[in-house]
Structure formats: C-alpha cells, structure tokens
Amino acid sequence: MNGYLMVLLSAVLYGIEPSVLEYALARGIGETQAMIVIAGFTILLYGGLAVLRHERLRITGTEMRNLWTLGLFMGGTNLLLALSYERIPVGCSTVIHFMYPSLVCLAMAVFFRVRMTLVHGAAIVLSVTGLVFITGGMEGLAISGVLLAALSSVTYVIYIILMDRLPIHGIGDSVKMVYIALGILTVAVIGSLFGGSMQGLSDPVNLLCLLLSGIMFAVATAAFARGVEIVGATSASFFSLFEPMTSMIVSTLIYHYQLTGKTILGCVLAILAVLCIAWADHRKERERNP
Image (cartoon, rainbow, N blue to C red):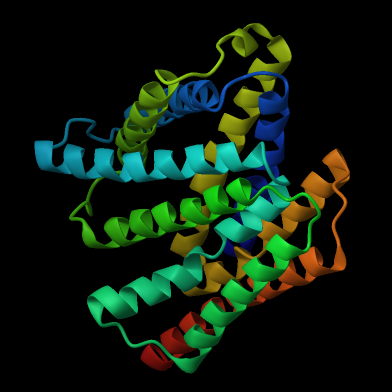
C-alpha cells in the first residue's frame, strides 16, 4: 500500500505544481528565469542528497554527456509547457501533454518494431480525438498554446526513449538528477539570452512560488521513483492518471477557467487514452509474470 501512496503523492504534486508556477509567471517572472531558479534548486538538493547517500558524483564523460542530453530534452519540455501556460489553461496544457504515452507506443512501433496492440491503437485514436475536442471546445483558445503543449509531449517522448535506450544504468538516482538538471539549466540559460524579465525575481511571492514549485518537483520525482521500485512501473502507470485530473481540477478552481462541454469531453478522451495504455501494459506484464 505504501508504494501506491507514494505514486499517488507524486501524481498529485505533479498536477498541482503547474498552477503554482503559472502564478509566478502571471506576476511577471520570465519562463526561462523560473527554470533557472528551479533547476538550480534541483541541483543543490540532489547534490546534497548524493553526498548524504555517499553516491559518487564523478562519472565518465560519456555518462555525463548522456545525462546532459536527457536534461536538454527535459528542459525543452519544461520550457514549452511554461510557454503554453500563458496561452491556454494549465489543466488543458497538462492533458494535451499527456498524449505522450500514446506517442511513445507509436514511436516504439515505428522506430523499434515493438508490437502495438489494438488497445494501443485505440489509445492513439482517443488521444487525437481528445485533442480535436479540446481545441474546438474553447472560445478564443490560442492555437499557439495547443501547439506548444503538443510539442512538449513530443520532446518528452524523446526524453523517455533516450532514458530507456542510453547506457546510464548503475548511476545513483540523485547523481542522475544533478546532471539532468544541468541540462535543464543549459536550456534555461540559453533561452534567457533571447528575452525574459529578471524583475520578477525580486518579488518575494514569486520566489516563494518557485521554491514551492521546486520542492514539489523534487518530492514528486523521488516519490514516483520509490513507488515504482515497490509496485512496478506498470501498476504505477495507472496512478499517473491523477496528474492530468488534478491539474485540470486545481487550475480550474484557482483561475476560474470557463470550460465547455467539448473541452471536458476532450479531456476525458485524452485521459481514457492514458488508461488504455496503462491497462495494456499491465496486461502484458501479467502475461510475462503470471
């Protein structure tokens, strides 16, 4: 039961964090400046944990390059999502971003010849249909925001595939996060050169929001990793459904978004797509380990 609670905690925190970040963005802080603060906090936190756990921070050049590359795609994902928050409701951004389980299945089938079942195919159809309903269900919805959220799903798919394929096993979890956060920081620093205000960092409310966002990200990451270790990835995937649902509910309550029936239906279809993927993976795992 503790494993499921850990995964549930991570999903809820991941769902709330975007609304906290959006509050700081709405008060004038730039997206890349927010990323710099959060990435820096992540490096300090996980660097300290690595020292306390006696994990070796010194790794090979290849391992460092691989983890840094992962961080670049994670940073790109975070930046695209942050940009989408300013254009469409946070909950919609999160739901659109959650197209990635279906896209992972499609990418694995196309590029790595992994067999895709009818359930996986149905999930892809549901994802696309849900996106169409979300896009057409909101008056004045910025198409640019939808595209940014959809692109964040693509960059996260690349991150997941690289995480699975790159030889990074055997490195401590805290050490991995330090070097991945360095990649995120690289994206943020480069992005800040093209604009963004630093004035918002002088606002203590903004700094508090960024601190809370960083803490939620760090705790959620650690809780999810611990939960997967206890209950397994396939079982944990079911609880990932709470992330888009939490994000949609919390952001709507805080920011009073007006959601139409089409938008709600689109979100439901997108969440059903994630459920299909989780159920198919769970069934496959049971067949392997009866």
